[in-house]
Image (cartoon, rainbow, N blue to C red):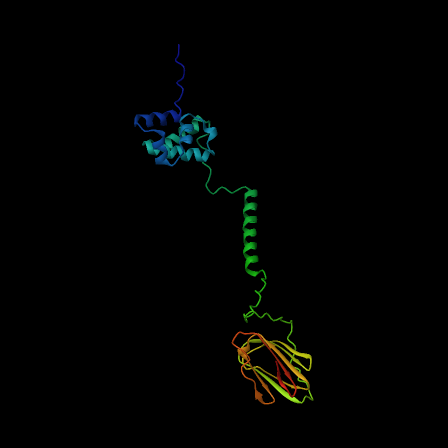
Length: 238
């Protein structure tokens, strides 16, 4: 009577026996190979279904075998025979083309990222509002377009306003508003009045008023809002 064929030893059993012979635990093998103990245990028990793809299994086997001093390629060949994989079948190439869906998803992600970057660079932004210098507690209204300088012809007396720095002003001649807005250093306004002159400024120290060729004393301190009324022929109105 013939003897029954000897069942070939499984690759996992070989690895386990070699590990135990060297008195190494799975934890130590995991540290050396950087393979989780769960995957190492699955290899030793032949539970390949919980492992990643076949390519990963072969890579794990090579690393595990090399750590134990076994022939990595011999372990891979035993694994192929154990799973019924033909020896002549070549391992999957690392550069195997990716599925078309993955390529499309990757291309779409790149395009979206590029669009976001371009939008951030070229999207129009609102300019910040221009800061209005603080002129004390006085807050003057700012018109959209300052009223132009409109001399009043035929007046009896002359009035001149000279600005030494940026300042807001409101001017009325004979009851008519002839200017409202900002003036800069060196700017000048000239009028001839028939009955009255009125000026309101946000910085008294920035303005010099001359009436009939005679300069008024300083209107006030720097940054102080002030109003001045002049009646024709009478000078400043208190």
